[in-house]
Length: 169
Image 1 (cartoon, rainbow, N blue to C red):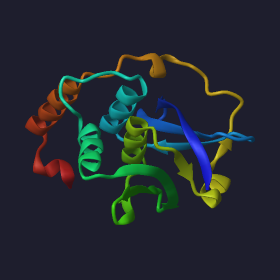
Image 2: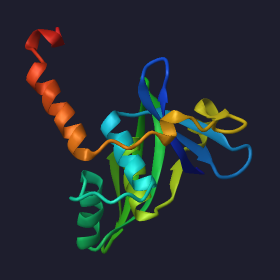
Image 3: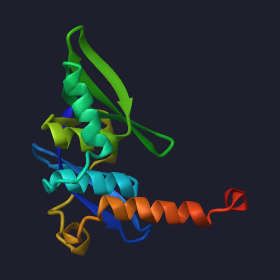
Image 4: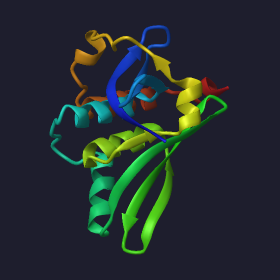
């Protein structure tokens, strides 16, 4: 396993989709780009910037539940890429020993940032999918304001109000 850190969340200009960038700590400092959803991108950015929300977000709730049950997040591991989808696991330590929980990479990273747990990528995965970049360029996407959680919920409600069954065919 290769330890990584979050270097940012950007928006891919071709797809207009958020991409989470995880970079290995040691040389050659390969970066693993992982496409994620907008709500997860916001959750990661909120935690990465140390912003407070008026009410706990889902990842804050999960962190609190793990702690109340006497556990702690030991690490998050991005394990594989199958059919264009990345898979990950959270290793939680509690009284009976370690528990492995399958998760989306974005959820694992959002929780790891909130708890300070280390993040890893399977060696064969970063060998196959990691790219060496000179430097992750700063751009407007990283510095853009993080959407307010209420705005995200409002946008989702607007979407639900306009969606029709035939949109899925």
